Length: 124
Image (cartoon, helix red, strand yellow):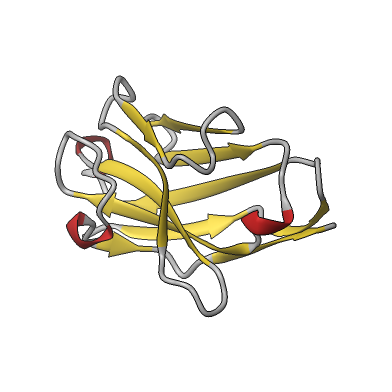
């Protein structure tokens, strides 16, 4: 069992930056691929970024490539999403997710564990 808790959301102006963190409980964290997804009001949940169990393989959604960076620290059981050059369309609830596999996935259906989400609001 893995429990995930996100933090770091908030209100930021367009062009600004935010750093989201996801703290995981459980000794099996290092064997899980981790991902970030987001959901804006009235829209379906969207893939943002994912990282393999050791961090060697990373995938990004097309809308965030070049602006967001995902990383993980298995010693601290954390995964981080650094978000730069934020745009109003990045406004959403951001969710951390864990997949019991070494490889990352862009499909939310392949993630078993989910955090409660953290709100990110980007003003224009």
